[in-house]
Length: 586
Image (cartoon, rainbow, N blue to C red; front, side, top):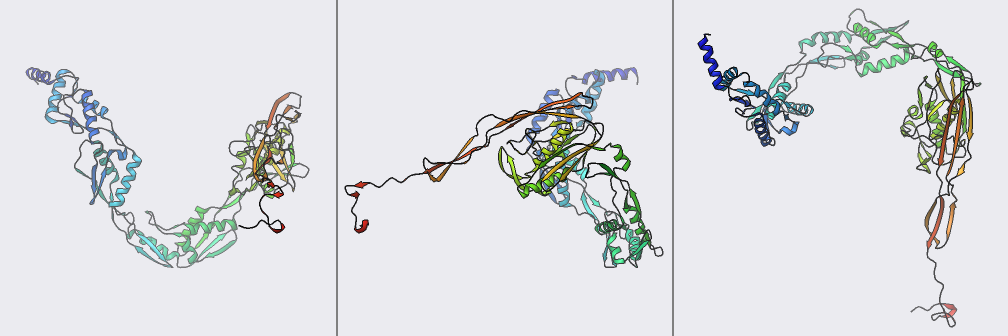
């Protein structure tokens, strides 16, 4: 370019440079002319137009069906500020260069498409609904088996909404400021994945599979799998597959039965407790399980073969989760705590005591871990077998689901107490219960009121429960810890008078009262526990305070009015009388 040309271009650029604070002429945002406006003016103009069309639906169409959709349906929000910022950059730069760019924009124009946010889940739901209205899903070729006879159901081509393109078109149309025109959504051909020709080999294999039985073998045993049974194990081509497989409900049932007969679950190493309290380890045992995928492959290979029709059942071993060596390393060798409580009374309560004792029996607590009564038992529900029995609710003795559970929690608390373990959560009952050790009862209520203690020893702990006809024993086993426990129990003192509950009784005359129960006063006590190590060092000094509500004195008072005595006249009761004192009838 000659010097004259450069100078001329510079002069043109300067002439059309305009103000850098205003958007170049010819620039549009979403079809709206914002040329010559400042940033604020452009944003205000676009937002005003957006509000004006926010309630106006856009009409979408496909295959003769129409839908009217508003931006609010999908939560469409347009970022007009960002769009205006992009529009500003269309004609910026140094004065001569800016002017030349603006000349180009003035001649050719520029339209900025704003970005928009949308509720994707709502959009996806509507796209599926639209596709269901206009689309016809394809159908893959399939094999239908009736008895030992098979036939091929041919494929069918379908039509479907092009969801990705349609979704973008819907968002763009709802974000735009244009209304009035119908937006066509694209529909495409939905091509089958599997054709009839693809299934021809599978049909031939199916014919061979059902032609005669196959022999199953396991170790030295063998048995026949007849064609009818084999047919129930076969999974015909589906979901885009064109080959036979072993699977489905029939196969699942067959392998479950095979596992019961030929398999054996692994057995973890456990702990056995003798009558004298000695601990021994019951050794672990590896399990024997059916390797289902490998056996399925063998059955299918035998089924589709015309000559080699024997399928070997593959078995493998499954290790126990806790081996004998691992159980020995846990260090559980002796009893470190024990407590026994007596129970009886309501049969449902006895049932609940026995049930919850079984739920916590055998629980293992790792070193440093916390035993939680509620976590160990879970919710005490009817589904687990809990029954209605006497229970304390809101300070009153009533009946409720799981009554008797606190007998077990109290026994566990006292076993941990006597072992000298760290107890982190314990709550007394609302009412005083005399057959529990004073100040050492422990109530629980799932999930908020819990009993918790910590295994503060270097070895594992094992909790065992032993349920007799009238007593419950909880034992804690671990490594010897040789702790000494000293208890100091304060006297049980009355802290008030029994509350009074008065109930009207229309059967009693006024002024008469009947005491049905003298109630119990509120009480309080506390227990201090000092735990010493084998060397005499004080390990814990804890005090548990217990406050018990009073049980009301039950009083019935009369509300029945007394009859007034009959009035007396000069010679007896007033009024004329007939013979034998009978009042004559009027």
